[in-house]
Amino acid sequence: MSKKLIELKSISKSFGACTVIEELDLYIRENEFVTLLGPSGCGKTTLLRIIGGFETPDRGQVFFDGEDITKLPPNKRQVNTVFQKYALFSHMTVAENIAFGLRIKKKPEDFIRERIKYALDLVNLSGFEERMPASLSGGQQQRIAIARAIVNEPKVLLLDEPLGALDLKLRQEMQYELIRLKNELGITFIYVTHDQEEALTMSDTIVVMNRGVIQQIGTPESIYNEPINAFVADFIGESNIIDGIMTADRQVVIGGQTFECVDTGFEKDQPVDVVIRPEDVELLPPDKGAVTGKVTSVIFKGVHYEIQVMSSIGINFLVQTTQYFSVDSLVGINVIPDNFQIMHKPKSEDEQILREGEDHENQ
Image (cartoon, rainbow, N blue to C red; front, top):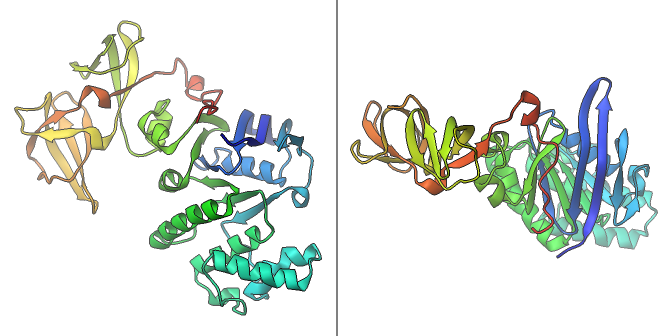
C-alpha cells in the first residue's frame, strides 16, 4: 500500500462571514488519482488552493511527506497546478511556454530542450514547438498547459476543472489522456470537478464535498453503489429518493406498499430515505410487477431510454432501460431486494451535512 503523501489536519477557511471549509481532515496517498467532487461553492477549489499554497487556512495544518508546509509559498512546494483557463502566455511559442518554469530555475538550455521534447512526446504534440497558443485548439492548449506543469517534475499535479471549457467529445478524450499520463508519470493527481462522469471515469478515490464538509470518501464503485446519504446518492448519478418506513428488518414500506430489502438494524417504524437507481427499476407486464404504473414520458438517450412512470402507489419513478415503452402504456414495476438502499433520515437540517468523511485507510 502506497504511503500518505499529503495530510490535511483540521483545516478551516472562511472569507468574511462565510465559512468555506470547516474542520476538514483528509489524506492523499502517493500515486493516487483523487477527485474532489461537489457542487459550486462546496469548498473544493479552495481546498485545492490550500494544497497548492495559493490560500492559507485560518486553522489547521498541511503536511507534505511528513513536513508541515502550511506557510510554505507555492513556488517552494513540489506541486504544479493546471487551471481551467490554461493560462498560457499568448506572446510565447509552445516551446517557450513549456520552458518558462525551467528558465526561471536557470536550468541549462540543453536540459530545457530535452525536457520540452519529453513533455511534448508525453502529451502527443511533438512538432508543435514553434506554434503559437492562438493557433491551437482548446484540447491542444490544455495539453500544453499540462506539459508545462509536468516538465518541472512535480510530485503532485493539481487540476482545477481543467476540462470545463472543452466540448463533450474532446472532454471525454482528455479524460483518457489524463488517466494515461497518471499511469506513465507515476505521480499524484488531485482533480477538482463538479462533473460526476469525470470523477467516476478517472479517479482511484473520490472525495464528495458539500458546504465545506466531506460527505463521503471511496472508490468510484463504492461511492456510486453504496452512497452514505441522500446527498451523495443524488449527486453521484441519478436516483429515485423516496420516503419510506422500516417496519422490520429487511422490510420497508413505500407509499403504503411493503417491499423486501436487505437492510437491518433500524428501529421499528423508523422513517428512512429509500434510494433506487433508475437502472435498477425493472419494467414488466402489468400483472408481473410488485406495483403497476403508467408511462408518462419517454426520452431516447442513445444507449438507453429514460422513462418516467407514475406508479399506483403515487410515486413517480425514473427508469433507465434499453427496452422501449410508449407513453400511456401500463407496466408492472419491480425492484429486487438488493437494489433498495436504505438510509437514515437526518434528525435536523444541520445533520444533513456529515461532520466527517469516511476513512479510506483500507482502500
